[in-house]
Length: 130
Image 1 (cartoon, one colour):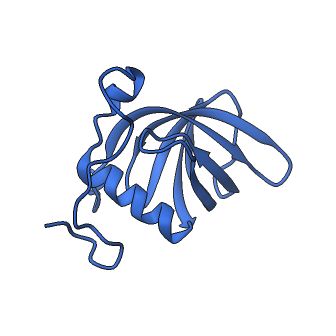
Image 2 (tube, rainbow, N blue to C red):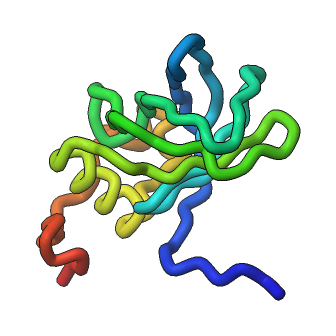
């Protein structure tokens, strides 16, 4: 039986740096949703381990911070994490990123995008936009 997802995933291709208790790694975020993301990395991680993450998303110059994430699965050089702890402002940014599906292809071409998310009426408490 197929596993049903309760949140939309957005396909991405942006850099991430992560750290576990005794290691640091880097990779690429392949897709992201409000509760988590999938990462491709040369650094091997273990399911059940906890990491801290900094994702370089196209909406601003500061990284999206995940204070605590749990590695839920690993397949070769890919792994999936569940976000557990994230600053409120970064939760809002993540919600906007997923909801608006920021033109992620444009972040590779600075001439086509100013790197900012379009404004809307989304708030973390509402969970829904206009």
